[in-house]
Structure formats: structure tokens, C-alpha cells
Image (cartoon, rainbow, N blue to C red; front, side):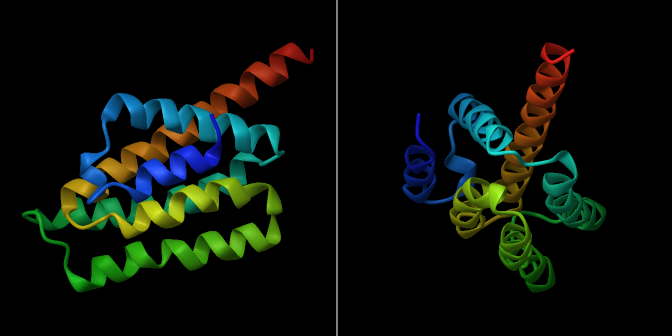
Length: 139
């Protein structure tokens, strides 16, 4: 499966919460494998993960209904330039950026942000899995 297939699937969503969970997990596994094969490092993808987790903590602490307040929305949108900056510094993240940017555009509600966080969590988990398998295979 190509990254463009994943990007197009995300672009066709009205909101990220519509992403079929089973498909989302398969796509996360595919993205993780591709960026691992491109030479990305755990610390590079964790920088973005830290920002997403910070936003998630802010959302959780406020007990929000389903609409996203402007300050939280701004932090979600900031993921795009953060991703761009990290991609310029490490071109091996370009496939991840191509998937994350349209994903951000599809975050409309708290529920869609929570689903996006699970998507990124899954990418990180599968990336670490690939990294460990590679390390064990090279011993």
C-alpha cells in the first residue's frame, strides 16, 4: 500500500472520527513501517507525540463536551508547522508529514482529536515494534 492511498483515504473523510478503526490501525502500521525504512528515529517522532499528548492532557482536564475551544484548536493546528520544521531537519519524516497534515484538517471535534491521538499512538507503537525487530534481527 502506498502512502498516497492513506493520504487519499484521510482526505475523503468528513471528520477524523469517521476513520474506520481497523483500517486506521492498518494504515498506522504501514506508515510506521515506511518511515522506519526511510531511517526515521524514535526521538524524531516522539517530539510530535509529546505535543499531541500535551494537547490531549489539556482536553482531558477540561472535561469538554465535543466542541474544541479556540486555544486547543490553535495547538492542534500548530502540529502542522511543528511537523514541517521536523521534516526540514529530517527528510526521513516526509511520509509522516504527508499523512499528518490532512489528518489535522479532519479534526473537527474532541472525539475526532481523540481518534487522531490513537492513530498517532499507533504509529509510534508500530514504529517502536519495527525498530526492536530490526535491532534483534541485526544481532
